[in-house]
Image 1 (cartoon, rainbow, N blue to C red):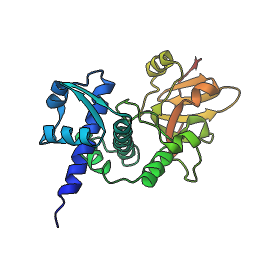
Image 2: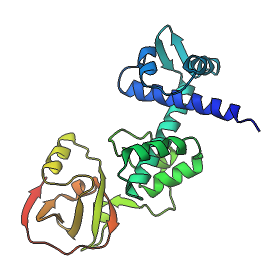
Image 3: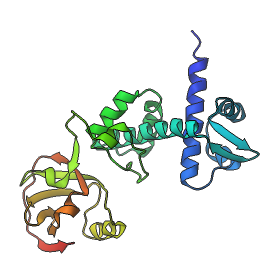
Image 4: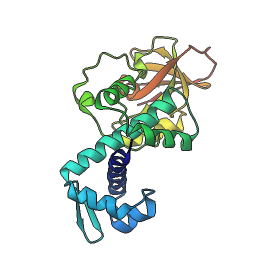
Amino acid sequence: MSHAPEFADQDVEEVAEELWTLREEERCRLPDLRATTQVAGLDAVLEELVRRGLLRRDGDDLELTTQGAALAARQVRRHRLAEALFTTVLEVDDDEAVNRTACVMEHVLDASLTDSVCAFLAHPPRCPHGKPIPPGACCRSFSQTIQPLVQPLDALGLGETGHIVYIAPREPERLVRLSSLGVVPGARVQLQQKSPAVVLRVGGTTLAMEPAVAREIYVKRVQPAEAEPGTLRALR
């Protein structure tokens, strides 16, 4: 049985995704695409994108149509959610292997499975590389029956420990302050108090922060760790 139509569709999806990524970097011209793509027969794929109404082309200028942008967002969303799943759940630290497998997953996940993965990860706004994950319907409605694997820090019980998966601060400068205190993705934290301030231990340091700040830190629950002596610092 021939699989040519499948691969043709996969190439269309791949190029649409690459154009989305280039647009994020504010460069979306044909020379940029040729320099980054690994899709064979690029010109034929671009013609197919234009024929399907997914792409507008004016010389070297390339622009996804509304329909094309929707297709690209779907692929980018699946790829980046797959990356988050592999690094968070399986704790794979081989970035090349994660990317390679995510490239396969983005073409086989259906809408329902994609939303299930997203809900399981508590609707992450960014992938492990810090790039935004296009939201889906599940993110907008927050209607989910799946217990998220990743939850806000204050969802931990007192004495419970978690690994920080990602941080989504409303104020960008807050991320810098948190980083300087060792509150970064991958760090192990133990929740010690929830009210009136949230108190947690990171390494040998005890930090106090406002509850609103703690709700911006997302963790994966692990077995509680023994408390270690340290100094108390406050973060607002």
